[in-house]
View (cartoon, protein in one colour):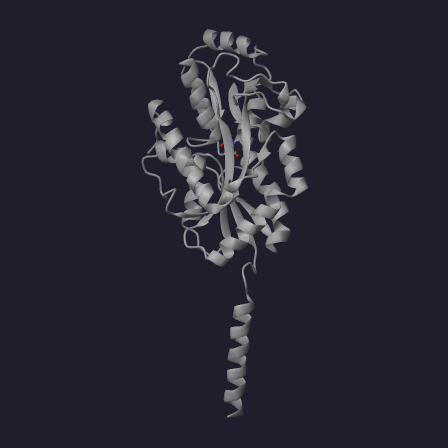
Length: 325
Ligand code: ASP
């Protein structure tokens, strides 16, 4: 009898413990679908730093690069929906459906949308040994080297791929594209002179531009950037003749479909605190990024925005005749 009472007490204690074990009670992993040290990784690591406290959990980053980010996204779509595996991805979430005929996930059905993070312009840069130090000189060099020019990117569906695609189509010129698992390794090869050109987020290029280590040909926004000073002086590609050239990359956070609402609410609340963290805002601003401060930090508006972007980029990509299996 005594034994039974003891067992009943133990069972009660266990039930209480379970009820108390609220999310999060272990490490949260954010999957970045590109290589470490690149622009997506940089945003994720800065954000994780600012989300750790409000979420009340250790956050680690897992880099799953390859296939323009789609490998990492697929991994998260198939992960356990318990709030401990999240995804931080960029505009590729909306360009991949037009680029891949056999995408292993459904962008709008397989994820919980957690909110958007920032918007980041891009810069067209070249290897330091490129014999052109401004855009008109680059055009001359490109014309003189038709068929020999190569352009680095982070795979079909990457931001750098989208920008490179628009660049080639604006010039009506085909270049040899060289895919990497992220633009961190691509930058290493560009600095070493193994590839000629790359278009990448300012979160990756600003340091190299400020150090004078790369050739810089322009920014991808319609208007010149307000900050930081090293980027503000760069002309746009639009004003240099590529009329209407306009690409801005955005980043956002996702969880696998079916993640419990209680966990989603906590992650979104922590994300909103992080987006207002002066340290996070300072880091992003110094790299030319703008932290999102409107209703797209809410799941419903985030999802609506992705739908708008899918409908915007799909026809542009299809018109450029690009796809993969
Ligand atoms: N910025 C890269 C891209 O082109 C990805 C990365 O390495 O973060 O999408």
